Length: 165
Image (tube, rainbow, N blue to C red; front, top):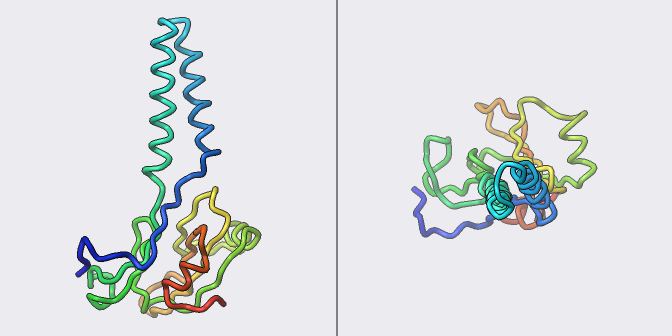
């Protein structure tokens, strides 16, 4: 089983860049303007700032974490000490994964649109422009591949023990 203090071989939170938080400021500004006729300007400003901070917090806290960890629950089909890929809430043993393919921004757009497979597991955030596509080789798994967004695809592939293909 995985211990709480076991270091991850790779970890990355797919948090939004600072530019996305401008949306939070816009939402807070709309709240401020909408409340101004009905309350004091100070109260409207405080509520607007709280709404902006809340929106930014939600964006960060709901961002998935991609990690490669050693060990985990054998119920997912892997050995107790086998490394696993975690992408958001999903976990797969590395033994169930085949070749890794680094996907650039154009390839990611194709894989999310015209070349998409509805059976694939996708961990995607629009503000992340790169990804790694991993073939699933476990015959018991109907998922053809995992598509995992990452800002550091070469490091993720190395942590998975795969070569870029």
